[in-house]
Image (cartoon, rainbow, N blue to C red):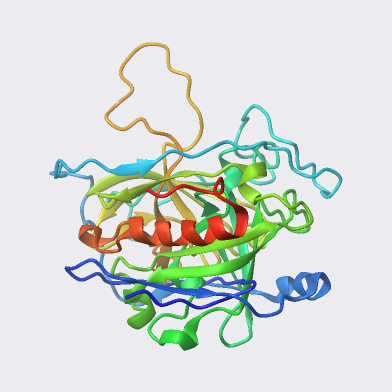
Length: 391
């Protein structure tokens, strides 16, 4: 069953978990038709927005006591995906006080002022697979593709309060994020956010690509009706308006990431997390975290220092570009592909483990292909047939 609602703009950030049943789930959606806040209100409210991330109090990842990944199974099902696009990568000039560049050749991902402790593992996780490295994505590269496709999502929740999440473009005007960043979860039509704004490469007071407003919202029917994190269905999509004052889709400027839509939940998968977490630079800079994601059968679990505000951020396979001269390209060499979105963390910040719902969900029950096609249908109505194409 398809549920549809209408929204004219949205802003949201939360931490959530979800569970998936055996048959494919239908989608829930909403169109935002309400009035948008003024630029002044948006700017003022953004300063007070609450970063979101659902938190678990007691849940043990399956490999918490294992020293390394052993006995990983290969189910033989190859991931099905779509490639992304680099876009123009020409951010606005003159809006930054810390040297946001127009992109170019990637350089070091951290500097002395932005560096975060490398190879961290969290309390009690030293001899497990939950090691990770987090680093600030510096102004030298945060506006260059593929980083430019990631963005800060600021929204007004169903309670009329302002929140922040993270997300990433997977088409010219379609953003993948967590279900809890567009809907409260479990309370039906009452749970939709009221307005939202997506800022690619956001950097505090610097908005190198400006923003676009949320027009349509989508989430899984299980998130809409159940809303429990940790169950594999905390996935959402946002269809955006044109980039503000530019009359072109945001992805034309930033590019967009590829994405997996079937067989995305693997036993072990190496991923890079992107997002805006309030414990790193007060949530004003994009941070990248590298880790091995392990499936518990419903979600990916992985080591991470990210906290509130990271919800909805993309989990990307093979982030960046690579020119290879000889040798094998490996079993999976497709680059810049979103496999999931950050969903939850632990209330005890010393544990440093997070979870992400894969886009396809447990046993492909999220039916992400249908969700994307439904979102693409609305995007084509807004922007024309070149906005996206069905899977």
